[in-house]
Image (cartoon, rainbow, N blue to C red; front, side, top):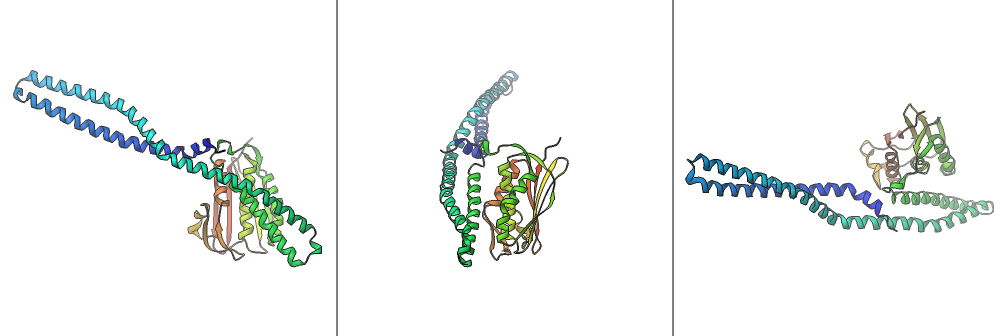
Length: 330
């Protein structure tokens, strides 16, 4: 079922801006109309008193009449302002309705497709796992192919999880906050991704492992850290080492993931946080470095927790991604 509330949250800010734009335009037209009406009225009044311009009483009466017109026009404009806002809101709603429907349908499709893909993917992973358990009876070439299939199935599973998360980014229930130790999160990610790193002959070390407690969604934070480590494995050089650090200052918690890849050009440091953007050069594994949903999702998760994800990188020297989140203090 389409989540209308999430769509409204997503479209709310543009609707307000469009309403203000319409209201400003209509208000400008109302003011111009009022100025024209006042100009015409004042012209008529001055023409009527022209024969009596030497009579102070007639001039005073004319001025009093013009002041009354100004007051009446001001009252009419005040009432018109309410009508202008109502019309502007209606026009904004009509204008954005097709966009709301498109966003809702896109979110529903993404959510449904992601869930439907899980079943065949689970079958693939189950079959490859069974085959790998009996790998001793198979030729080494076949075993290597099975490991590649299993590795890519795991990556596809993470991609599906990201798609499901992205389909609910703007829902109020997107985060389930509770006290979460980032050290526990990092240890879990390292445990889950070590087989993938080993398959690429990449080592993972905890350079700094201190307790860092935040009020956050443990699942989403695991996705954040997992995406950063997964990218470090994918884009790092073979036989290199990934260094992970987690620590806390007085009111800020940090997680840093450092790889030994080819690095990222300075012009691409912000672009990689946009969906399906590529950075110049190739990875240590010879693949073009195209960033899909992972880094944009990381940035969204960090910002949803009141934090940020930044990157420091130089071509040929690797990259360091740092997550900064508000920490819980005693």
